[in-house]
Amino acid sequence: MSHSHITVAVLGLGAMGHAFAANLLKNEFTLRLWNRTRARGEDLEQQGATLCDTPADAVRGADVVLTMLPDIDTTREVMFDQGALEAMQKDATFLQMGTLGVEPTDDLVQAIATQRPDVVVIDAPVSGTKAPAENAQVLVLASGERERAPHIDAVFEAISKGARWLGEAGAGARMKLVVNAWLIEMMQGIAESAQLAKTLGFSTDDFWSVLDGGPLAAPYVKAKLDMIKSEDFEAQMALEWGLKDARLALEAADTTPMPGLQGIEAFWREADGQGHAKDDIASIYAYMDTLKRG
Image (tube, rainbow, N blue to C red):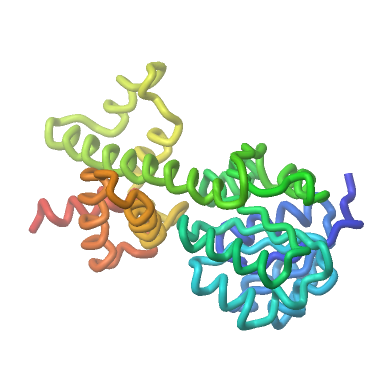
């Protein structure tokens, strides 16, 4: 079904933003793009998207402005300092899909409500990484006034397997930290268990064979064990972003004790400093190998 009557601007063409943009193009939305490194959007431009030089130019005439930027400072810079919010058309939808943290998201929602009360803010990070995003198989953790955002369901249908609506804008950011705290702790557990298996004389295949078919056999576990087996740590979720999300979750937890996540944050900080920042989070297994050798 063609959605060419709906114009979507995508600001931020990293692994996830690029995947969202590609899926919107496949579903025949009219697409306007901006990325700080212009080359990231040139393949999409060849497929019919309009690649713009500034964020303000990209959002002009867009029904939905989708941001997938790495952090709150970049998001605020693009929306406020570079004029994207001011350039948005009346009653447009601002669809924030990055992982920015709880307080920063709340502050952003409030700032937009103050400056542009006509703009509908939908806070909607996703559960899923690069490959699921490319295949439109991520789950959207959506929050905000759905009834005021007429095109939002069509956008989510194009880029995901569905959306969970969780409450007012900011609820998505909160649930994202819950999900990622689990993902980070699960990854550390997979790496430690795989290391213990190796020490005790078992392969990753041996380990999976006793999980397979049982309640512990999460597909995520299999995918990460396969990465460990192949020693191919091309990032689905880069360790630097996993570390960022661990810190955001710890900040949001406030006085709630999180001893496991605190330990992982410190350990992943070491791995980040030892050259694993751009590798997949599964590379924490390889970092543990270097410690054994040391």
